[in-house]
Image (cartoon, rainbow, N blue to C red):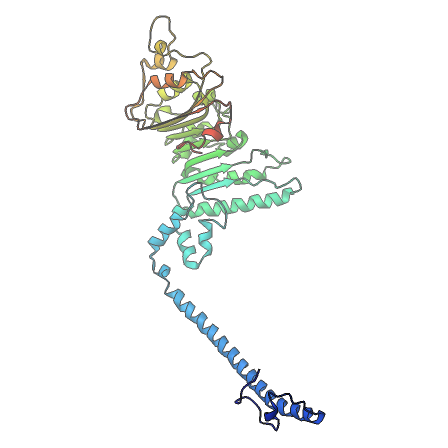
Length: 409
């Protein structure tokens, strides 16, 4: 490619360019000397220009960084008042489950953004009033007890820090103990460290969900009096079989809590529920029983709960079916124990607005009328929402009906 007259060196061979002329050995040596000098000079100039460009690019990047820093100072988020920022923080909390002790999720992650966000989040107790607490489990048999102890202690320390941030506000807590992991490990009880962290905060618990072995529940509520649970409004039991809910049991402190209004049982023994010591049925506003109740027991429970507003229940077949006409009276008919006890022809629930019924058939007879029988003995003047679901599979109610609205799942 011809560089053009402006960049072409002046030599005796200019007129030979673009022709088929073949220079001699002496001429080729002379030509090389003509080309090397200007080329070296131009190369030095290019190198100087490149260095100058590099300096300019460095200055440009420095100026961009300084400009961005000024732009950050003018970011609209910095102009938001604390009150609005706190509202945004509140809306970052999960809506489908309780917050967890995870540094990558709200509210903990909010403390890692900047000094202002950390100050605001730690000074907003409402961000820290709810938490799900899983007891650490070993990943494998090779996981040493010492490592497990350290993990448990760290989680307990994090929980204590979390609850300290909540101030004096009521707490919503969920405690989960892995079902495949026994409470004791080689005779050591370090795993109770986490449940016992809650002891200092029992008076502030408003909503408590327990999915733990009975032994853990007993240890957690040892020496706890009903008046110690002065804010407790809702209890949800998933793991306990309620065999310990007998007269004189220390679990009575939960059921006799002065403000208890809502209860949820997932896998509890129905007979134990009915004989629950200390439970003030006439104060309950919401009841959920998801492990199967026959009509007689269901009527006993709702008949003793005249202030119910919401009821979620799984009904099963009667071993000895109750006849509707008999419960209302008549010659030779069997009457309902609850109706006889109350001297009533119907169970009246004047405040009940929402009723969820899950029906379980234990036989192939699909003409059973136990749900209809149950409803025929109820008078529900305020009922607004009625949901009915049917299953003919025995067992596993929690998976099939645990997600019913208001069930506490």
